[in-house]
Length: 566
Image (cartoon, rainbow, N blue to C red; front, top):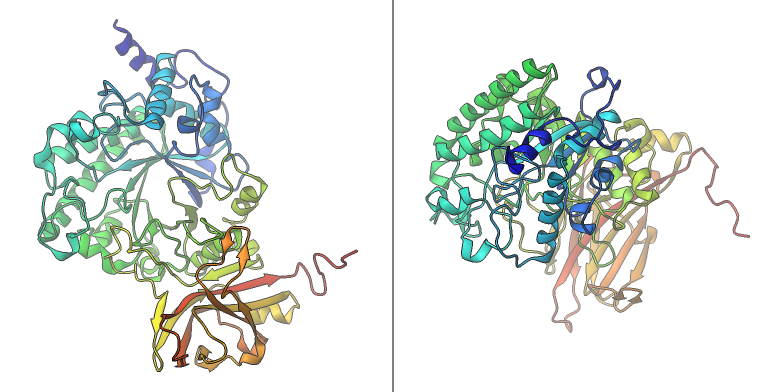
């Protein structure tokens, strides 16, 4: 037997031929009795993992660490991105090319390392995917293999030294969407593959079948909402035709999953990651109500239309209402990318606020959906584990400190930002007489906790650019009630030197210490900011840049966390 076929054969067995303690399958863990997925963690298995960060060779324990770090963290479901946008995979596949299989010389040192690691593990008689599955099952964690559905084409001259693209995408440029005259396609790559071609669906179905039938996974996630492979998966004038094709393809996937269930005696779940806003679905050819009514999916992982920007207030009520009584679960998918001067990623109170908002709207679960979650680098620190610990417990989240933030971004937007639900009200430039209305959703029942003496502070902060207190005048209303300046502290950021440099952008913060009569209500709140007067000597835009609401709690009435200073 040739070495390649021999390695493939042993790689298909649990733990591979050369068993290692970290690769041994669980002997007694009964996952079947555990609740359904509630707190998930998505991981591309590369950035915050040994694939990129460890010098080869790797041991099985080195590779399994990305799953092992979840032990007792509060995460019950691991979504592992087993595939790449270019058609290659990160495991010992029998149906698809592995990362780097078709590369002669490399022109990316990190991606070269990733391929070396994968090939080294396989040459050692181990299957990288099986190592992760065994680790999860040994510790009672669901393992769902995440599948890239929307492939990206390319050419060998440009991408051949990357290792991320398969011969299939190189050899079939005719499967690309190509130029699309629709204005919404202006920023979309014409190299994305058109799923109306049966050959693409067949190729993807082969990978899906392998992940369901050859491996003891607990199912798959069809990743249908990521800017890495932008929507729609056809030309815009083909969306109506694509909708029926997509639903029929899901029926084929469900049949494959059912067959794998019978063969393995293990339930095979199908989760689909989709934009949360229901108005998006018809625009991209997703017949989500049909998927639910026909039980083609076991759950929907709902994300923002701009999947790589922080969004704490996904509108989940419509999809929750649609799924109730059907057995289809709704999980909220959170992106932690904040991109502010002092914080690249969402803080712990921001993540807790997002989870609380999701449960308050009826979501069945919550999870982190970025390619990697590294707010303090990697490996994680204690703060990360404390963040995760609360994500599946609405009762604990109720009195966790939170920071609610109005959606705000200065960039031009991601590729899928044309979809409904992706609008960002801030920043907004105003001239005298103009106003901006910003929605702020919070999950806290503040009157209840205030009556128990548990609320320590509620602070509403509005940040302005180029504000001049000598001449500029603003009126700020929360839910139609004016907030008096007497309860606001003005924080001067016109020029402040911080550890990271001068505060940017220049301006002021109005920091309102809200009394109970001004508390925001549970659910959707509306903040209105009107510019009344502007310094005529300043030829710079006045902007409402950021709005947030910080809520802090006591553990018990009169119980202060730091009661004395010396």
